[in-house]
Image (cartoon, rainbow, N blue to C red):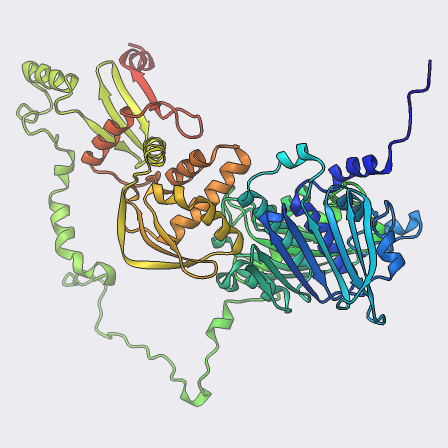
Amino acid sequence: MSDIIQLLPDSVANQIAAGEVVQRPASALKELIENAIDSGADKVQILIKDAGKSLIQVIDNGCGMSMTDARMCFERHATSKIRKAEDLFAIRTMGFRGEAMASIAAIAQVELKTRRHEDELGTCIRIEGSEIISQEPVSTMPGTSISVKNLFYNTPARRNFLKGNPVEIRHINDEFQRVALANPEIFFTLHHDGNEVFHLPKGSLKQRIIHLFGNAYNQKLVPVEETTSIIELKGYIGKPEFAKKTRGEQFFFVNNRFIKDPYLNHAVLNAFEEVLSTDSYPLYVLFIDIDPAKIDINVHPTKTEIKYQDEKAIYAIIRSAVKRSLGRYNISPTLDFNQETGFSQMISHKAPEDIVPPAISFNPDFNPFSNERKEREIPFLRNNQEERKTISKNWGSLYEIVDPEAHQSGLELDTNRQVEIENKVLKGVGKQIFQLHNRFIISQIKSGFMLIDQQAAHERILFERFLQHLESRQGASQQSLFPQTVTLNSVDFELVKELLNDIQSLGFQIREFGKNTLIIEGVPADIGTNINELEILEHLLEGFKNNQSALKLNKRESLARALARNTAIKSGQQLSPEEMNALIDELFACEMPNISLSGKPVISTFTLEELLQRFEK
């Protein structure tokens, strides 16, 4: 029998390796930007076409490469970052494996132009599918320009798995934001199909956060800073009142490298435990600086997972630092006895001689045992004296039976009258409905009574109604008296553009108004009055992203679910009898009235037999 094990050709091996390093255009962009940062560049320009499928170009003003280095960078395991295995535990650069350029060149058409600052001419190399097409000297600017064209052109199966342009551009924006946050001292620009999406000048970390997410974040940030013998922690957290329903704006960086770590994320959420509900997630951008010898970043191909020597100590430091920042800025109670904020508000700016001491006056003829003493007036009840007297005289009426006919014979009802009332109720005439704790609706039925969760019922009604609007494209809209101008971050703005047709079908009247800006001229008629257009839109986007990531729902169902959850009446809202009747009628007109959006029951029925058993009758 002949031998069956053989070495794969380099081109095939590179394509297999590319499957781990480059999953989509955003992965290739991440590797190219990190190489630009490692080159010492302070200016990085990014050009994207067709969501990265047609072109990804990264231009930097870094150190550049010689002709030999330009050729070697496309070989597997060729890198300038490490020389021996021990260097893996002293890494400060973004890249170190030497796989990215070889992987990208294996599945795309790549053009590299590079020149060192001390050279007069640079080098231009063109590669397609790991094969060098040309290599020649060229006149170019100092630094490096890499163009990746037609990604996955020679692996059509992989290309077919790519999502639509709106989805891919969102992934690109996510990767860009992570790198831009980690390097506020670098100037970045990102253009997509000729339109400038990001223009980020050099600045501080706070300025970078505001440039990325919007001017509104200037009032949302609380600084965090802690230095210990184990780690150095710095960054910003968001105030609890600005928390969102999704985890989108949560960033951890270790030695300026973005990581995903549920354990450290739990440390931050634990610090917010007393000031934040369990279904809300705060903003945080935190940087951990640690000795590279105490961590291992060579765990995952995407380098987003890290192993720590002392994970529990890092958890405790992060939790205490975040909690202390919340207390220091009066966001949560603090037990810091060195800082008493109560007296800081009592300091006066007046001169001591201008301060007038309070005067004390009293009545020397006051006799507490005098019968002529008048009733003392309480300031906030002064205008309600007559009302209180009326209530005190008529308190007994609270215990009277509401039905005047039923009160004719005291507490006993005439037998004939009782039968008549029961017959009316059972036939649906004069149906008795009550609201329990402003949360549940009790409705009498022939066999007993129903208990309805008012919030879950309204969510089900709105969900099915919004789905019908999306199908028919005829959602009713109510015009806003004053149109609202809304500025979003680039990621949310791109998401609105993707969903604009469906959002308008729900009843929103929205149009673009400049870069990352929208004008809301109308909202769905089903969501009532006294609403904040900006909050409704933000909650709609957050709910949509949460449904897409957690439930994997289709686009329309995610939109309908998000809007229904955020606009339905809430537990604790008082309803009139007419509103309760209308809610019940609309609920039973739904296709699935018994099931809430979370899969739990909306209606519970209690029979007379069950009630009698409770009273042992």
